[in-house]
Image 1 (tube, rainbow, N blue to C red):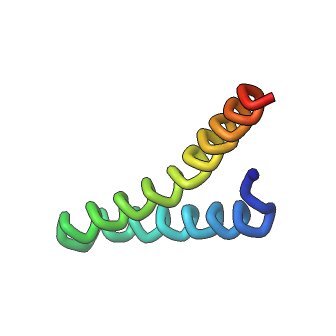
Image 2: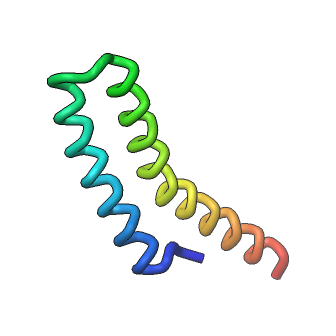
Image 3: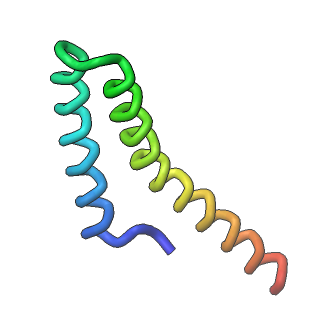
Length: 66
């Protein structure tokens, strides 16, 4: 089951905000702050990829059962 439009839009907005925060943090914060923001951004972007992988796996399993 693919992500709903509202969830996908919210994740995209969150990513945009985190990118903005990372740009500011890179100029004035400690490296640890930048690392954590980047990690969170990566985790959010991975959600869509994992969802696609799970959809493919579910479809493959369904085809094998039929």
